[in-house]
Length: 125
Image (cartoon, rainbow, N blue to C red; front, side):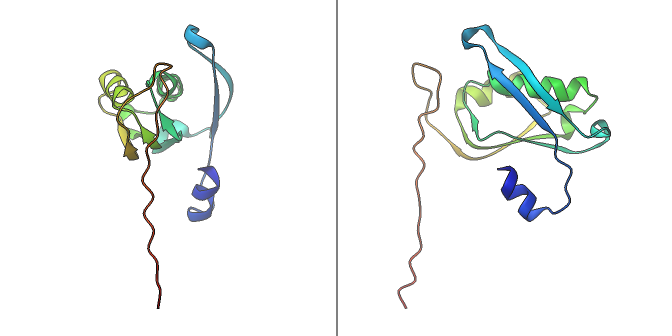
C-alpha cells in the first residue's frame, strides 16, 4: 500500500508503526517513526486487513497519544470484517474507516475469509 501511496502522492510524509501480535496476549509496539509534527496533520493509517479490530486499536492509540485528534485519523484498508469495524467504531467513534470490501465474517482463528470478486473489462475491438 505504501508504494501505491508514494506513486500517487509524491513528496508525502510517511511514518511507520510496527506492531507484533503476541497470540492472545495482545499487541506489542516494535518500531515507530512518525513525523515530528504528526499532531497537527491529517493522518491516513494504512493496514491491508481489518479483522477482529484488536490490531488496529494499538497504532490508533499510539497516534492519539502523540496528540493526533481522533477526527483527523482515516483508517484505510482493503478488506474489513464486520466484527472489526464494530470494535474500532465502538472504541473510536470519531475515526473514519475507508475500505474496499466488507467480508462476511471471521473464521475460528479470528481471520478474515476473503471473498473478493474480481471484475475485468475486456476490450475485444
